[in-house]
Length: 194
Image (cartoon, rainbow, N blue to C red; front, side):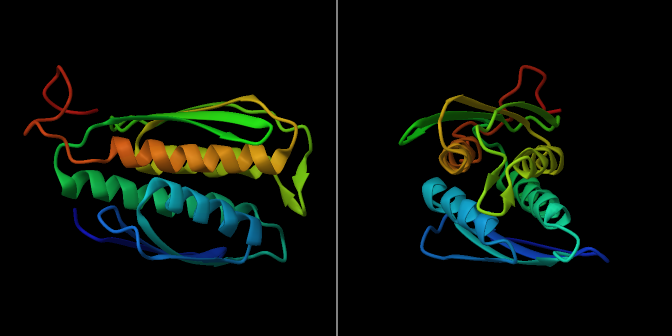
C-alpha cells in the first residue's frame, strides 16, 4: 500500500494529511482543536496506521469548518488508498467500550457514500468542543471516502467517552475494511464496486 498525501487549502481551512496503512509508528496530529486532535490520535493509534495531519482554520468563527474539512481530507486519503491498493476487504466492523460507553462502527468501502449516525450525547460539549460537530466530521468522511458508514452508540454517560469510543471503533473498522483483499478482484457480485 502506498503512502497517501492529500492537501486542501481554502479561505476557511488549510489541511495536509498523510496516511500509511502499513506503518503504525508515526502519528503526528496537529489541529487547532485540541479535542479533535485527541480524537484523531485515538483513530490512528487504535487503527494501527500512521496518520499525519496539519490543520488550521477560521477558529475565530468556530471549529465547524476545521472539523468538517478534516473529515473531508482524511476521507479523500482513504478513497485514494482504495484506488491504489487494488481490491480491499471492503467491510470493517468494530465494537469498542470506554468506561461507561459502548460504540460500534461498521464500514462498507463500496464507492457509495452513506452515513447512518445513531449517537446521542448526554452533554452538548466536551470541554469547549461542540459534540454535534462529530456528526459533521463523520458525514464529510463518509462522503469523500465514498463509503457506507454506520455509527452507533449503545449507551454512555459521558460525552467525551462516547466520542472517543466512536473514533477508536472507526480506526479499527477502517483498518479491517482497507486491508488488501486476498482475491484479485473486487468483492462484489457485480464485478466492481459502486
